[in-house]
Amino acid sequence: MIFCRSNSLLRDAGPRWQLRIPTYLVAICAAAYFVISATPSASEEPRFVSAELLQLAAADGIGKSSVYGTYLAALAAERSWDLRQAATLMARVSEENSDDEQLMRSAFKLSLSAGLVEPSLALARKIDSAGIKDPISNLLLVIRSVQDKNYGTARDRLAVPQDKGMAAFAASIAVAWAAFGVNDVDGALSSLAQLKDGDGFGVLRQLQEGLINDLGGRPEAAEAAYRSLMQNSADTPVRIIRAIGSFLERQGRANEAREIYDGYVSNHPGSNLFEAELNRVEKGQAGQQIVTNPAEGIAEGLFHLASAVPKNRGDELAMLYAQLALAARPDFALAKLLVGDLLDFRRRYSDANDVYLSIGPESPFRWAAQLRIANNLNDLDDLEGAVNLLGKLAEERLDRPEPLIIQGNLLRYSERFSDAIQAYDKHSLALTRSKKAIGIFTTTVVSRLSALSFGIARRRIF
Image (cartoon, rainbow, N blue to C red; front, side):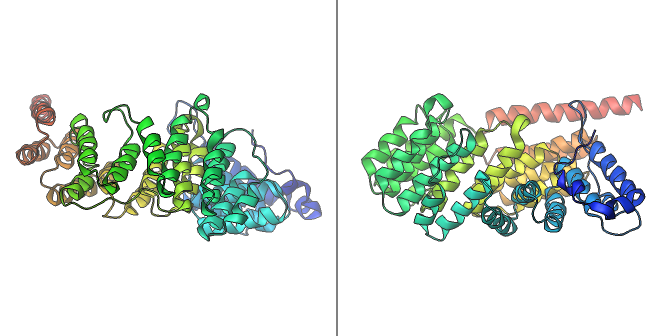
């Protein structure tokens, strides 16, 4: 059964609704069908609603725009994770029902989830002007105030403690960086007290403490916070290694930084995440802090909150906080990877690729993004596009074997065994230029033999 989220949409319709029941009923029944058909059960793959069907659902049965059909079409788009379409349609409904609080909040959250920052800000201001309490929209307004260096305004917006849960943790981080903005480092650190070890956010608190002390010119306290997060390079998250490595480089302790980077690489053969750092150390250049201002500090914290949400239970919430992180720091490649990953999880491969493509060539995460694009192209039934991209990546980095491994695998799965063997052979040649050979070489030999045996078996059968 389909229930409208906003009863006033029907309650306030009056005589006009009553006079046109047949056409509106057609629209609502059609749109409701699309909503249901777009919502998969736990055992089904998601079914997407095309733009043409959404437009049909938004019509009133005689080709004329209907707010009721538009509303249900927005729900259909939301359920199939066509977030931009859903945001556009829900914004239209909200505009025609400007006093409806629920519609306003729905339009805002869909707009933010779709990464439409400026429209989201306009809706957040409207929500605020209406006196509606919404922690997510308030947080977006705080972020904009911090970006504009209006730190006092940001603190005032967060003066009332938030409820428990993610909003409270996010507010704690935002208050800390707003305090830092007015040179209250001690106040900033005390604001992080709500991120408790028992809630699973002790690591986030310690990293935030390290970043605040580092940027605040307290190197001893910064190092203590960073060191408390490092057990060994093998188990330490990449972001923490990057933070302490950068800190050590800037303290003139490049050899210690190199040991940490090398420790991670030796435990993760094939990783190129610290290639730029190792090259920089080799040249005697100092690294930059991973956070250089309060807005970036908020983005860092919100990204970690978003990462902590399980995809299979709260991907909508994770998307909201990931997009908030990007609103605070638009060039944040890690947050872009997370947004893309959430879209991949919902099989919105084309939308995910648009996000991955926005990661610039200077980012250490560009390589991972390009490999994801190739896999998504294959999932979009564009095998040739995937193969061509992987070929370009292989030519771009002759010492990197991953593109040819993936290329060979995709070709093998498509039963193009001869082409797969050629890709594996090129990969074997690439291994001679790489320092990370043994494990990957074994994989290649097995894959090549597998492609060859599958090809022979197919010829025998057919």
